[in-house]
Image 1 (tube, rainbow, N blue to C red):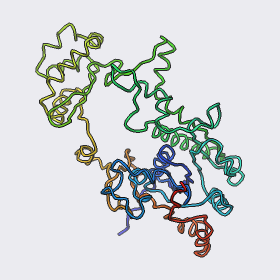
Image 2: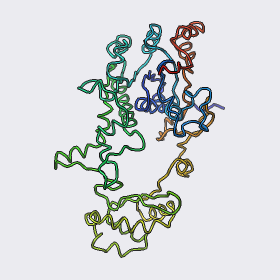
Image 3: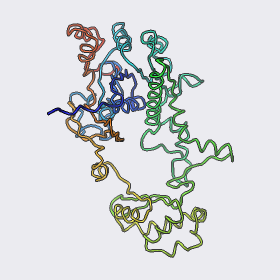
Image 4: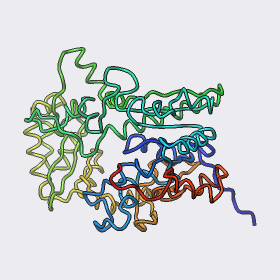
Length: 424
C-alpha cells in the first residue's frame, strides 16, 4: 500500500534569514513560516530577542521563571513556532562570516533594527547583494530608511499614536487618546512586510531579480485610517474618540449582560436589522418610533437606544443574546477573554489552537494558522526555538561545519545557547 505524498506547503523551498525582533518583523516571518518557508531566526548571546524576557502579566507557565526564563516567555514562544533558531555575534568577524555564508544560500533577509544599523555592521543590502545577487531584503525600522525621523526609535504604542489610531480610541466624553490592548501597529506592519515579501518572490520568479524593501512601520499604521485623512481634507475635521460607536451604523455598542463582567456587542447596519432587533427585544413598537425610524434618526438618539438595549441585555446571558439576535440576522457576539476564547466551541471546531510541546515549558495550546488552504494546508511544525537551539543543525548540516568547528564558535564567543545576562 502506497503512503500518500505529504502536500507541499506553498512556500516550501524558500529560505528566510530573520534578524527581526519583538513583534512586527517576527509576525511577518511567522506568517511566512506558516506557509512553509524555512525561517532561520538569528540572535546572539549578547543581543537576543527582547521578547524572550518579557515575562510579566501571566506570561510564564505557573508564573515560574525556572532555570532558563529566556526560553519560557509566552510572547516569544507563540511568535516563533516553525522557525529555526541560531546565535551568531555579527560584531565578531567569525560571526559576520557565518551570517554572510547563510545569506549566500537564503532567498530573503528581514530586519527591523534602527535605520542603517545593518549597513554599519557590513550587512546592508548593497553589501549582501554582492554575496547573493537575487536577494530580497526587507528593512522595516519604525520610520523607514529615509526622512527626518529615520534615526528615531519607537515601538507599537508610538505607531498607534503617530499613526492616528489612538486619537480615535477612548470614551466619547474624554478627548484623551487611548492605546489598544495590544500594540496594534506591530502586527499590521508584520502583515504588510509578509505581503511585500510574497510580491517580491513573485517578481523574482518572473525576472530573476532581487530587490530591497524599505518598509516604514509608521506608514503601515497610517494606512489603516485612510478614510479619516480624506475626511480631514474634505471638511477639516478630525474624527475624535468614538467609544464603541460607528460613524454610520446605529445602534452600535457593547452592552452589559447577566453575570460577572459579561458583555455583548450589537451592531445594526440597516432599518431591517433594527426592526429585527426590536422584535428580539420584545419591543416591536420601537421600529415605528419616529426617533428611530432610520439610520440618521437613530444616530441622533443613540443614548436613548443604548439605555433601551442595556435594560434588555442586563438580565440575559451574552451567548443567549447572540444566538437569539443572530437567528434574526442581527450582528451580535459576546465579549470573550482568554478563557472564553479557549473554550469557545467554534474556535475549537475550526482547530485554530494547536497543542505544541515546547522543551522549556511543556505542552500548551497555542494559536496556529488562521487560514485554511485546501491544497497546501499549513500546520505548526515544531515549537519556538530555545536560544541557539539549532546551531548544530544549521551550522553543521546546512553549512557543513564539523562538530569541533561549531564548538569553537562557542569558545570564541561567536555563538552559544546561554545568554550573557545583563548584556541585552
